[in-house]
Image 1 (cartoon, rainbow, N blue to C red):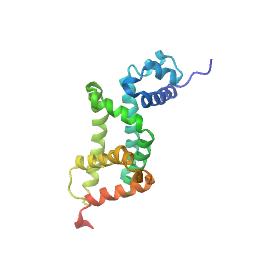
Image 2: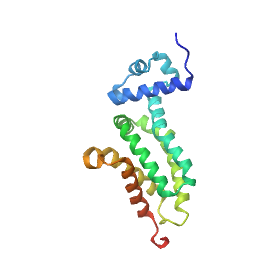
Image 3: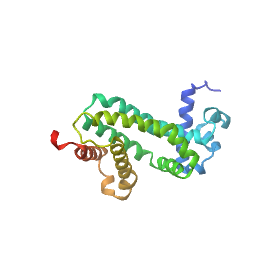
Image 4: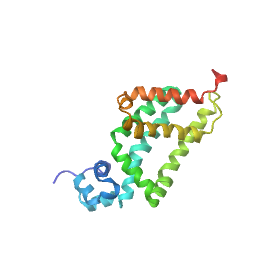
Length: 201
């Protein structure tokens, strides 16, 4: 028998296996037995880390979305807004395109399962969005930008990112062929020039 793996390594191993299974079969079509087999662990071991598939789904959103966004937010105060937004958008574009089937499966579950949606909103979305809104409010309050509501700016950025990734790049081969850095730069310019206060330029 091989050496025992540290709990954080085993947990990451199970999450990676779950991501592959969810991408192949969707959330509802996947079983914990399939995920355990893919991870190379007993089903009982999986349950010690994640009691239900719902726990797996929420942990996956935490790893794929919340943690990367939090890392970017920590860097925001020390960076120029254009550069920060370009780097944020580029990283999210690359990550979302790489995990598109998985993200589509997870978002579908959030839209259709009330219990999953409520858990996602309460445990992940609202705490993260409050953090994002607080950081945006601080930036918007510096006088460089129009006095827009932070939530409006936040959702406009989020909607543009998802619109480009989920729909635009799927439907428009010319857009999909552009380098992520170019898309991020143009999208960041579009957003920041739109909220900029003309009297401050």
